Amino acid sequence: MSDEKRRILEMLAQSKITVDDAEQLLAAVGGASAGARAAAGAAGTPKYLRIAIAKAANAWRPEKNVSIRVPIALVRSGMRLGTILPVLARDDVFRRLHERGLDLDLTKLDEAHLDDLIKNGELNLDIDSGKAQVRITCE
Image (cartoon, rainbow, N blue to C red; front, side, top):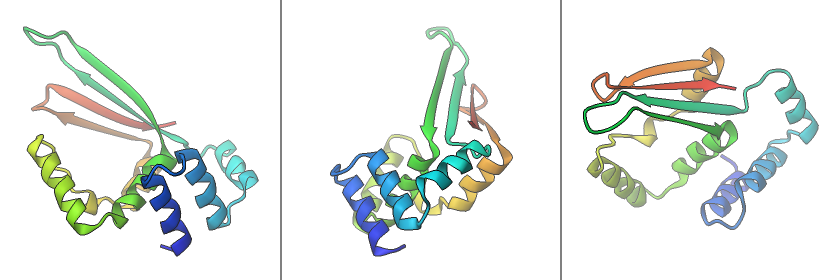
């Protein structure tokens, strides 16, 4: 990763710039023009991940459905930002996530996984012993 990209991500992490500003700066540093990005978007390249979660009702709780849309550029930036977190902070974050029941190792995330998801277009997961489903699609 270049120093320019690292500085942009650090400014984003420190809330000195917005996500949109960071995306524009990263595109400028990477050499992609706004016109090229627009053409890529027009050509059918997905711009968002839709994450839909459906959890079945039980005796004390009605059915829950959640649907969020996350810009793919934000996901990519977050993945890059995770690579520059200091090791001590990273360990603390993982420990806290584990304490809350989330065994998530962000160091194993790879842009290739995201690219596969975008290429295939859909991922379905059963969670909570099959009582809930997560569906991730590209749009």
